[in-house]
Length: 360
Ligand code: NAD
Ligand code: TYD
Image (tube, protein in one colour):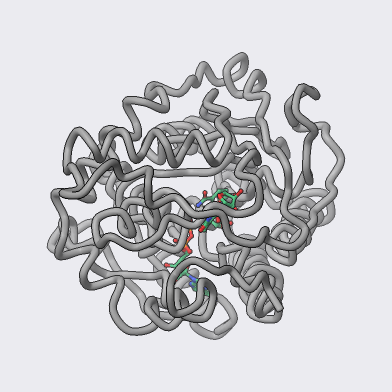
C-alpha cells in the first residue's frame, strides 16, 4: 500500500480518487482535517475497502511511527501542508509548524522505519514530496520559464516554508540514501478546491452575487494546471521517476488573473447567467497582496522527455469541467463555506467583500 498525507485536502483527495481508479493497490490517508481538510472530498470512496483514513497530525511522531510499522507502505506521497499564501502572510507560524516541522517529523518516522527494512524493500521504497513552483520566486513577463535548475528565491512565508521542506527532503536523500523524489507544480484547479483560492472563490462569489476581488492590477500571471493532469504526472513520477530527481509539472496555460476571472465569468454567463447583467460586472480591484509574485511559469520539458507526460486538459476544457462541477455540487460548497470560511472572508476582504487589507 501507499501512504498519502493530506489526502482529505484538494489535491490529495483528487489523488486518492485517481489512485483507486487506476490500480488495485490500497491507500492509507493521514490528515489532520484542518479547515482545508474535508472528509466529504473522500465520500465517494469512503466505503472502498482499500482506503484507510487516519485522523492525525504530521507532528504526532508516535502516531507516524505506529502507522509506518503497522502498514509498511511501499511509498509515501506527501501533500499535507498549509497551502494558502494569504493566510501565510497573516499567520506565518502555522506554516513553519505544518510544512517545515511536519515534514521533518514525517521524514524522521519514514527514515526510522525504512532503515529497518530489507535491502530490496529499501531500494523499492519511494518518498514523493509535493512542492510548488513558488519556491523559485517571481518571473518577469517574457523571461524563460522555471526549470528544475532554477535557483530557489521564495518570496512569501508559504513559499519559504515549502522551500525549506524541499531542502530537508533533498538532504535525507543525499545523507541517508532515502529514495526521495520532489515535484514542483504550478497552480492547480479542479473539483474539491477550497473556495479561498482564486478559481473556486470567483465561482462561489459569482453564484452568491458577491464582488469578485482582483488584487492590484490583475496582470499577475499563473500557469494553470488541471488537478487530474497533476495526478497523472505524480503517478508517472512515482512509477518511473529517477530517485533523487526533481520534476516540474505545468499546465501550458499561462493566464493573467484578469483573464482567469473573465474566462470564469464568460463560462458562468453561459451556464448560470446572472439575472441582472454579465458576471464580469462584479469584478472589483482591491489592494494588492504584499510581496505578490508577478509571474510563475513552468518548463515541463524534463517530465515530458523522461516520463512521457503532457497535460491532457487545455485551460478552456479544464475550466468548463470545473465550473460544471461546482454548479453540480451546491451541497459540497454550502458545507465548506460555513463557519470558519465566513470568518476568513470577513477578515480578509472586509464586510462588503471588496477590500483586501493586505496582510497587516
Ligand atoms: P489543501 O490546503 O487543500 O490541503 C492540505 C491538506 O493537508 C488538508 O487536508 C489539511 O487538513 C492537511 N494538513 C495540513 N496540515 C497538516 C498536518 N500538520 N498534519 C496532517 N495533515 C495536515 O492543499 P492542496 O492545495 O491540496 O495542496 C497539497 C500540496 O500541494 C501542498 O503541499 C501544497 O503546497 C502543494 N501545492 C499546491 C498547489 C495548488 O495550486 N493547490 C500548487 C503547488 C503545490
Ligand atoms: P491563489 O489562488 O491564492 O494562488 P497563489 O497565490 O498560490 O498563486 O491566487 C492566484 C492568483 O490570484 C494570485 O496572483 C493572487 C490572485 N488573487 C486575486 O486576485 N484575488 C483573490 O481574491 C485571490 C484569492 C487571489
